[in-house]
Image 1: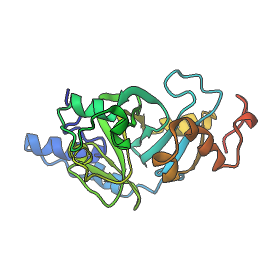
Image 2: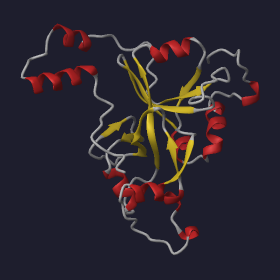
Image 3: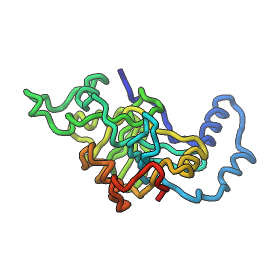
Amino acid sequence: MDSFGTFDPFRSSKSRRQTAAAESGKDEAGDDDAGEETRPPLELDLTNHFLIAMPSMLDPIFGGTVVYLCEHNHNGALGVVINKPTDMTMDVLFDRINLKLEIKPDTPDAMPEVYRRPVMFGGPVQVERGFVLHSSPDKFSSTLQVTDDVALTTSKDVLEAVAHGNGPERVLVSLGCSGWSAGQLEDELGRNGWLTVKADPAIIFEMPVAERFTAALALLGIDPVMLSGDAGRA
């Protein structure tokens, strides 16, 4: 199984139209593209923010989750769930995509910690694909630079670097991502589905998985017991 390929979730609809036009030999540049370029900025840009599910969200996929938003624009939003582990660890993933570990431990206890980390369920979109949040300045074949400290890569070379022992210092690997079409996230926010707060990379990369939800709430000064299904959005 090779979960990393050429899928690029970051291209805007404009870029997709231009690619299609190039393949068909047509020139799609025109009034519609000009309109996109002159759009006003979003009233609320939640790139590099956590979405924290409210208790009222009973969705079996997103209930109790924290999502790190990597991109939010007029076309929609894209993020990765950071606190929903699968039963797969990194070393198992490496084996499935035919990556040889630089260090072959004699016993499981001797395995480097990074190889024993759980792979996250990043969301219900493209669940057969890998999405890797990692520290910068490492850049790979298909990388979205979210901030100076956090990037998202969808190409296999980032895991090759980790397997060979020279990858990013901080890394979170997920299968699948979370996506919202234009206006969909704003609608969910309006219905008090999520709390939002500027993200802290330490919660993504250093905090134990089971503590990430509580830690994200703490950024807002909220204790989980204070929340109820009827609470409003912060």
